[in-house]
Length: 149
Image 1 (tube, rainbow, N blue to C red):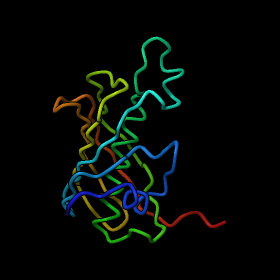
Image 2: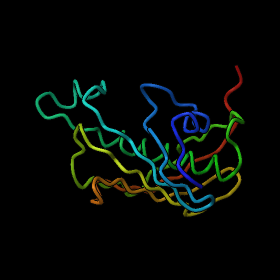
Image 3: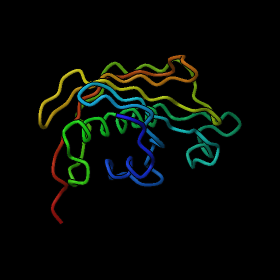
Image 4: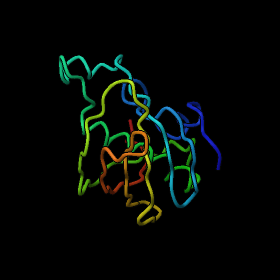
């Protein structure tokens, strides 16, 4: 499946600014893998406090960006785009941060299915800058209906 623009990303995820951390999908192989991009800019609010004088993207947001990419993979693979279903984190394992992520880079988010069921999926994720691994994590997510109002 070819690239997905921001409109398709927003159709797959409920996240919106400032929590939408995927700007586009470069490649998606349904039931298998995804490669997405997060453009990291100095305009992001978290850079004001993390850290003054040495802005770096918080590791937890890198993992969140990986999880959002994986969420798009799950929603598209299971045919749930536009269904209102949500993808919730259940577990994060083996998170490692290899190099700081600074403003001005394109963060490549790669996620692959490790296990896929109708409501619980496991993924392996890797974040890269110019082909170099900067972070990695394994995570589990649950696909569920949104809470009732």
